[in-house]
Amino acid sequence: MNATLTLPPGEQPDFDSGEVYFIGNATTLIRFAGFTILTDPAFLHKGDHLHLGHGIYARREMEPDCQVADLPPLDLIVLSHYHADHFDHVAARDLNKEIPVVSTKHAIEELHPLGFTNGHALDTWESQTVQRGDARLVVTAMPAEHTSDFEMAGMLMPVNGNLLDFYNGDQRLFRLYISGDTMLHNRLYDIPRHYPDIDLGMFHAGGTTLFLTTVTMTGAQAVRCAEIVRPHTAIPIHYNDFSVFHSGLDDFKKAAAASSTPVKFHYLAHGDRYKFTATR
Image (tube, rainbow, N blue to C red):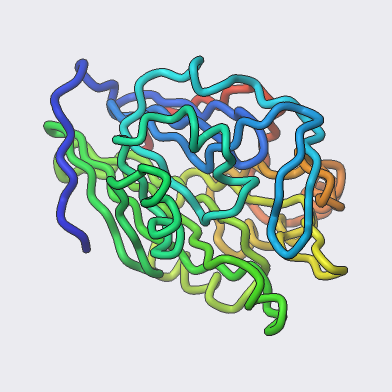
C-alpha cells in the first residue's frame, strides 16, 4: 500500500448518502463521505475527433453533460488508463494539475510531462489510501485486460479496474467497483473472493472495436462480468459515446433481462444521478 494521502479539512462529511453523476463515456463524478472523485475525465464535444494511436481516430457521438468549469472542487481523479477517450486534451488543458491522480504506472508517466505531477501509480491489488479527518477512502487496483489478443495487447495501454472503499474511522460504509476497459478474463473471479459485498459496480461496455478486434466488453459481456463480480447493483457506462463502439445500451439491457443473477441493474443517461446510502 502506498503512503496515505492526507487532504486538508473540508466541510462536515455526509456519511449517510452519496451519488454518482454520469457525465458521459466513463466520466463520472462520485461524491460520498466528504470526498469528490472524478473518473476517466473526457470532455470533448459531440462531433470532435480524438486520436487513439496507430492511425485510429474516433468521433465523439454524444455531448458530455458538463465541462470542467462546471465541476465542484475535486479531491481525486481515478483513471483506469491513459487513452484519449478516458483522458482527453480538454481534461489535460482544463483540470487543476495539482489534483492527485490514481492510475496505472504507464498513465502516471504519461501525465507527468503534461504537468500532472501528483500521480499515484497502482499495480493490480495495490492500494492508495486518502484520508480527511475521520473519512477514509481506499482505492485498490482491480485486475483488467484490454484484450487477450497478444498482438493487439502490444498496441494498447495497461489498464486497471478500481475498487473504492469508503470508511468512517474503521467502519466501512460503501464499496464501489469500476471495471475499467476490460474484457472477460479469469482473474475477474478473484475479485469477489478477495472483495465480497460490493455495493455498486459500474461496468464499461460499448464493444469498442479496433482493427476488427473487440477491446472493451459488449453489453452481453458486461452483464456476464456483473454476474462474476456480483455487486448488489450494476450500472453500465461507456456504451455510446464514440464511433468505435459497436455494442450499445440495448445489448446490455437485453442480456440483463435474460440473466438470472440477483444483481439489480440500473440505467443512467448522460446527466442522470444515481443516489445511494451507506450500507454498513
